[in-house]
Image 1 (cartoon, rainbow, N blue to C red):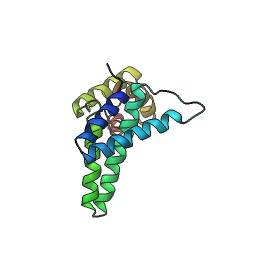
Image 2: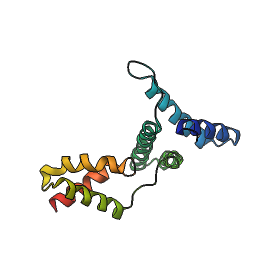
Image 3: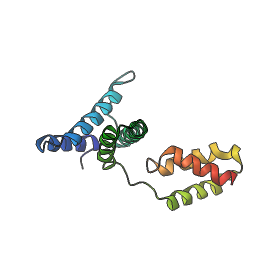
Length: 151
C-alpha cells in the first residue's frame, strides 16, 4: 500500500494531466509543506503517515481560517478559493467525528480521569486527544470538555 505522501504525488500528477488547477495548486502546497517539515531540524528524515496527516490537518485549518477572514473582509471570491482548497485536503483526512461521537469520547475520558471542575480540563484533554487523532479540531474538543466539566 502506498504511503500518504506517495498518494499525494500520484494524485498531483493526475491533477496536472487533467488540468485541474485547484487540485494541482493545493497538492503542490501540501507536498511543499511536507518537504519543509522533512528537512527542518537537525537532519532530514522521512515523515510517517501520521505526521503527514497532522500537516494536512494544519493546512486544512489554515484554509478554513483564511476563508473566514476573506469572507468577513467581503472578498467572497478568495474565500471560495480557500474553501475549495480545504475541500481537496479534506479528501485525504480521516472522517470527522460527529457531535454525539465526540461527546461520548469526552464523557469516557472524564470518567476515566475522574476529573471535575475547570481544573480538570488539562487532564481530560490529555486523555482524549490521542483517541481523537485528527478526527476533530482541538478547539471543538476543548469547548466540549469545558462545557461538560463546568456545566
